[in-house]
Image (cartoon, rainbow, N blue to C red; front, side, top):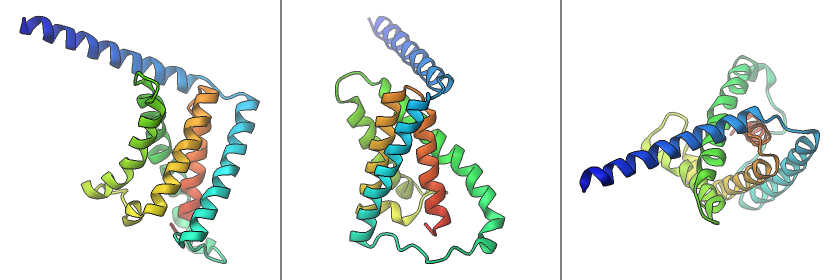
Length: 179
């Protein structure tokens, strides 16, 4: 009896992993259309407006009047490249594609909740990319907004690239402006 149960679990996990890999492959291969790109730009603008309002009302982010480009230039390329892979591509694959494979009508909400929770978990685990601001409720609200915008963009386009681009722009902008 135990062998039968173990065999069923093993078979189910192989199917799930196979399905997840297939979903990720399709999401990566599917290039966004012009409509997808325009929608992503519109969603990004909505995010900027909402995140700006949250930042302004909570005092979470105080943007510098001038960016010191000379001081920033040595690390700018590193920020731009690193932010593409971690967190943009890796988190979008995990939370948009990976968790969207969950069954049930609440899978988008579960993926969004996991995305938001992942940020404080990084701090609690002492991961290198974690920052104390990841525990701030205002930051988590902005994270939820980003997750929502990226989820909408992924669901509408069925391509990972629009949400990766949105996520990447947010992280690079935040880092350049002193986040």
